[in-house]
Length: 113
Image 1 (cartoon, helix red, strand yellow):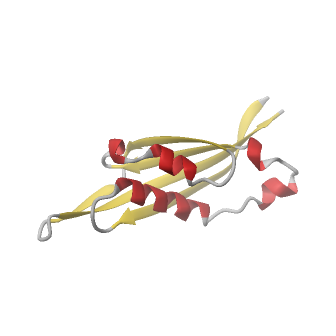
Image 2 (cartoon, one colour):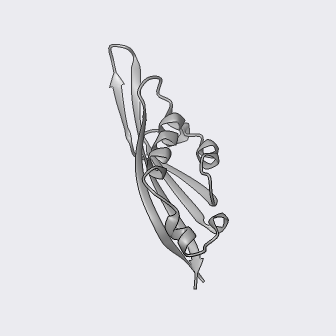
């Protein structure tokens, strides 16, 4: 049996003040989830507990994302999270603040013959 990708959704999230990379990542994942539906999976009679959910987060400082918090935010499946360099930081020099923009890709895979 081989894993086959059923769904690939992308999302963007931000934290406008405070530079919270995890908050931006969580918002990016939620944005991606709100663009998809599991109706096809239900129609095919597949068990959502058996799906493999692969989340990739892109931010400028990957080490500042709490991957466990991102993983816990997904409602179904066996979730893995990878955080990579990406996204965008937008400094506000007047206020010594930063806006963090995160990108997320959420892939759903099932084992199929």
